[in-house]
Each structure stands twice: as structure tokens, then as C-alpha cells.
Image (cartoon, rainbow, N blue to C red; front, side):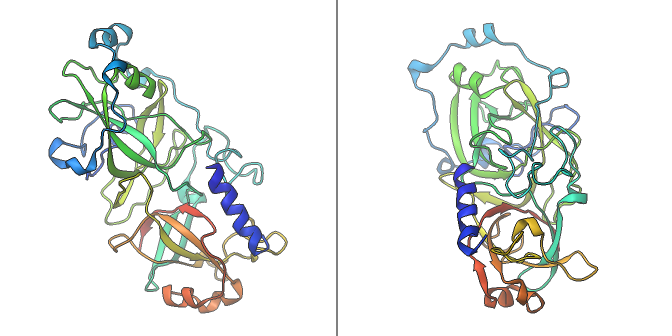
Length: 349
């Protein structure tokens, strides 16, 4: 995220300022497991996989060695990972050091109360979307375990190796299919290092999922009508600890190289970038007495090219009243193009 942060700040300074649930499903927020919506062998084509992450024969450990070193872990008895989305290392637009009203580390976040924005779709339809802050374009890996016959390992939590604040973290995850032997017991592996040490085959797919990692107890109750995902938290493993995350599935995302697709969004702030206190710290401009911004997305779920990772274009707030759809936003005076990439899944229209 360091390069993304630098690019965002430089841009503002230049202006003067497949698989329905695969890779993110695995268990609900109560610590119990499940395989509903998981990948099956028939749902994954050969073109979605490469051998780039597979262990070589010389790196493999035997199954006997694996069984001797590890035993299954009950997620309900495992410690909860610490999550802080608002540290200076994790946040960009939302940092506790600049806004002490933001929740502390491990404190539940109510995204419906604090991070729900009302804007316009390309045709002027009123929409709502969550704001999960700036994210890189390169997805992080998430590991989903399957038996050799292609069946998912029932009750196994998916595994990640980064959380907010870690180098390489992203809300967007590229699904990696891990093949385990038939005798494998669910939740024997609880970290990426254990997967690698066991020598299991790892095959990156083209599937990308939007799964923001959040503190336990966090809520985001809205989902788009095209999204059949549950609104509750899903649990995964992070270095032997349980880590919760949301799942947003209003559109299928895919990439052969792990790059998250982008779609444009046009926004304006109460104070223009380049002016004292201008840009994101001043907040989005909205209509008097209303939460209605004139932020406009170029696409909606179901449209070709839709992505919840938006490439931000900032227009002059002097033209706020004239902007109400994509055409008027594109015709406005653009103060900064491609200023940042933000994760903002559309949840209503």
C-alpha cells in the first residue's frame, strides 16, 4: 500500500493538495464451518490455474511428517487476531491520528453508521455504497483447501497471511486453490507457512473476492440486490488466529495476474484540493440538509466493467449543482484524475 499512498498524495499535491463464494466462504461469524458456495472441480477451468505457486518435489514434506507436527484446531477455541483499519499503516483517508472519533483497534465498526455514502449512478439513479478506504490494485492471496477429488474441505476456514497494516494487505483477494490429501482433517492447517511446509499443491485462480478484514463484531448490513452473500462476518485463519471479514459479491471479479479491475468515480469535496484543509479531510460535499452527495459512479452492478474498486476523479465543487449523472460529471472541471483507488461496493440503487 506504500506505493498507492505515495501516488495518491502526489496526485493531490499536483492539484494543490466462479465461484460464488469461493475463497471467502468457509464459516460464518460464530466460528462454525461450512462449505456452501465453495468451489468444485467442475466450476474451475484449467485456464484459471497456473503452476506458479506449486511446491517443487524437493520442498515437499511427507504426509506423515505433516500429521506428526500438527493436529486440528477448533476455531471457537482459537484466539482472535487483532485488527486495526485506522492505524497510520492501514488507513489512508481514515486514520485515527487525524480523527480520534474513529474506533480503536479491535473495536467493532458500524459501517452503516460511519461509512455509508449516498451518490448517483451513471443515469442519475440514487445509490448507496460503503467506503472501505484506499486499496492497492494488486490482490492479496487467500487460500481455500480442497481434496484431490475437487471437493472443498468441509468446515475448513480459508487462510490469509496479511491483515490491515501489514505490507501487501488488500481487501481484494485472489483465490488460491490448495489440494490436500484425503486424510487431511479440517483446520489442521491454520497458517500459510503450514500450507507451504506441508508441500501441498497451490494453484492461483483468476477469481478475485472483495472481503474486507474487520474487527470482530463489526457490521455492514446492506447488500446489493444482485448480491446473495450473507451480511454477517465470515471467519478465516491468520497465522493460527481467527480473523473476521465481510464478503461482497454484487459482481464477479477476475484477473489472470491478480490485478483488481477498476471503474471510474467522480467526486467533489466541501473544500477543493489545494485549498487550506481541502480534499478528503473536508468531507464530500452534499446537498443542504441532506446526505445526498453528487458523487457519480461510471458503472453499477450488472454493467460491463463494473468494479467496487473505483478510480477517483475529483471535480471542482463550484460545479456541484450541475453534476447529477455520468455525462455531467465527465463534463465538469476535473481537478485531479486517478487520484486514488477506493473500495466502495455499491449496495443499493
